[in-house]
Amino acid sequence: MELKWRVLLAVGFGTYMATMDFNIVNVAMPTLSKEFDRSPDTVLWATLASNLVVTGLTLTAGRAGDLYGRKRLYVLGWVIFTTGMATAGFAQNIEQLIAFRFFQAIGVALAIANGNAIVTDAFPDNERGRALGTMGAIVGAGLMSGPIFGGFILNGLSWHWIFWLRVPIGVTAMAAAFIFIHEPKKDPSGQKLDIPGAIALFFALSGALLAVNRGDSWGWTSPVILGLFALSAVAIVTFLRIETRTASPIVSLPLFKIRTFSASVVALVLNFLGQSASIFLMPFYLVEIQGYSTAKTGLIISTVPLLMLLLSSASGYASDRWNFRYQTTIGTGLVMLGLLSLATLEMDTPVTGVVARLAIIGVGTSIFMAPNTSAIMGSVSRSMLGTASAATATSRNIGNAAGLAMSGAILVGVGSAAAGVGGVDAADLPADALLEGIQWSFLAAGGVTGLAVISTFFRGGERASAGQPGTAAGPLPAPEAAERVVAGGAHNEADQTITTRLKGQHSTRSRDPRFPL
Image 1 (cartoon, rainbow, N blue to C red):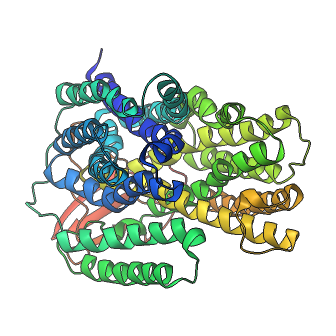
Image 2 (image 1 turned 45 degrees about the horizontal axis):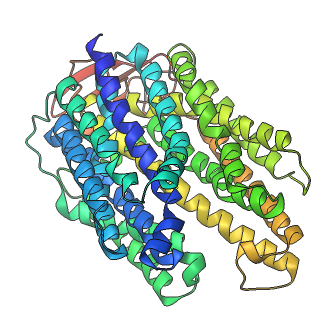
């Protein structure tokens, strides 16, 4: 087996584990609530703490990989993840479990921030989409199998085993990464990680995520939620001030002047913002309105990850040969169509009609993800792959969190107005009012995804592709030291080359022809 495929196998194995972890613990929430005799709202923190850490640290972890070596950070991530998984099974109370999950999430952030970067670095440009498409299929497998494995484990064993049974798999993933992944050349500039910027970024992202996650429960106008939004706003301003002054920023702001990068990131956020509505709303529709069992509901909802598993590799293969813009536009268009079709659900919609609507979303997601991720990874220099990989993961988390908050607010707001009541949970709404809230939520989600369609269609390509494995593109120059000049005029979309002027030195790279002009 060629080295590049061994690298993909190693990273894919880890990606599967990390993706499955997000879902397998959710299945255990009712069991943990009974075991520790704590409310579901308290037990929820076992998952929420992990999400806060992953969202807040991923961009920093990606930058650290660029500076100090991606293999080193990736393997360290798996050491932390596996250790946290082993200790979580020994938790004696919910506070200990939350602490162990917090520690475990640090490892997840280190691993997922650098995974796509390692894969991109191992494959030539004309196979990048195929490799990242395979990663998308692995994500689908993890999303689908997490609840299934969790259910089987909890049916036959205690909750401890959802952690312990995965420890050998974590050790295997760690060993495979150590053996198969080769460390690329590290940043020769000697730059250090921007710790103040990392701290500000953590509070900015985790504060905003906590606010939108708990807004419904604590009240959107409560002092705590308003305080979290204020903290996040101050932290964002502080982060931007730090980033424009430091010689080694966590996120190089000139990256967002690269139209392909910025448009692809925006499309990713908007796509997941809309798509997360189906994850949140479908259980309400299937269980509360249709009266299906949780097992049948799980099977129906697995339509989307199943299609990701089946189609993502083919989508990636196609993206190596076709125009990124058209493929991603078709994909987001299908997701939008699927969400709008879910807005037409009725009380008695047959299961085949529900599955068909979800299948449209699954096909669209499969078509969109691989080329969009490949566009992000191919729009930056090889020395910035960790940052690009981390931006991809962070964009997904931000989109999901915002989408869940939006869907929940519309569902409760519209449903309560339709029922003529206020201050009730969605599950307590009458069926007709709940259905109206679901319909309007899907309509809004479809509208948001329509913005993603626009973003994908009008994307451009301002940077060269990442280059062949083994080449070093060099770090993106700091704003004060570099002037990006496009031949024939700045941001001229018809130009085929980009010249980077850095302290009197010039280098010209051909633009990836697959990027739309």
